[in-house]
Image 1: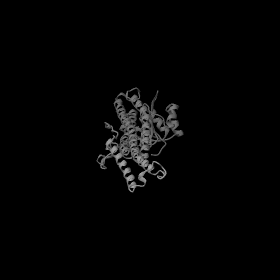
Image 2 (image 1 turned 135 degrees about the horizontal axis):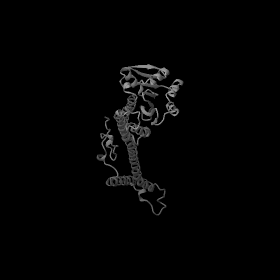
Image 3 (image 1 turned 60 degrees about the vertical axis):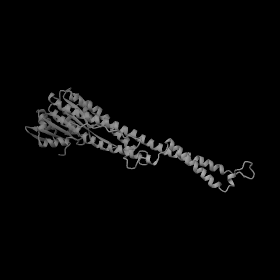
Image 4 (image 1 turned 90 degrees about the vertical axis):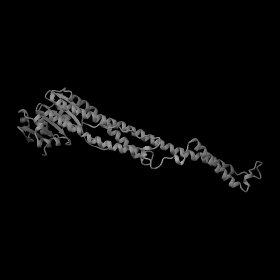
Length: 361
């Protein structure tokens, strides 16, 4: 049903749906269990919240831009802001705010993107059991589904980080490496955003699980503790991903540096070999007239002078290469890694070790 204010009212063992503010207020005052969904700011919605004695600051937070997860305790209700995950990619993380107001016999939610409200509404349409138990249990269902939304995202990030590890070893230091570095920085930005949100959300869920608020009955506390435990494990996994992405960045820089060193070593060896050859060629290329100079160069008029100069250059080049080989500065063909070797086994490069993800109960 498309409505700006939608209420599900428990009538005996069945649920009656209403969009009229007067009917909703009458049901709440009669002590019936009511769940109200707010879609967007309207005069009718503001009037309903005002008549329920909702604090103006709470109303402002409900309709305002996304706020950090928090919990506020008022005399007649408990206000909770939780963030769920809509979707995640390497470059962005969609965090969706869900506002929850827990009253004595009523629950008001503002789920802007239908993150969890649609699922719970479908469940209530089939069975009123959850609404029969009361507002705290319905609030637990909202929190539980919001936290469970993190699990597919965590799995998605896990597979993408696996691919990132292979890309670091294969592409770092090559023409394709620029995209890998961009991906690493995007991952760091996404995980940092998740970390900032999860710190506040963990503290909020911890307060709910401790029974610090009278709106949460003692018999519901074990279920709230279960939600806190799940989110704590999700936070631990996301922290391990942050460490892993940081290791990928270090590995990227290390691979790039090693490959740059190989290039510089090759260029240096070529320059070292060519330097004495250039020196020899420069000596024999000087324009001194052997008839005039008292110190002439007999090789200039020698029949084998040219082959002698070429042979001398070749002997010098071979001598230099042999010296480099004896020092281990260049590799023999049998020492070069075969092309069949997996990229993660590149000499001198250790891929980042992946931390095991603990399964959620």
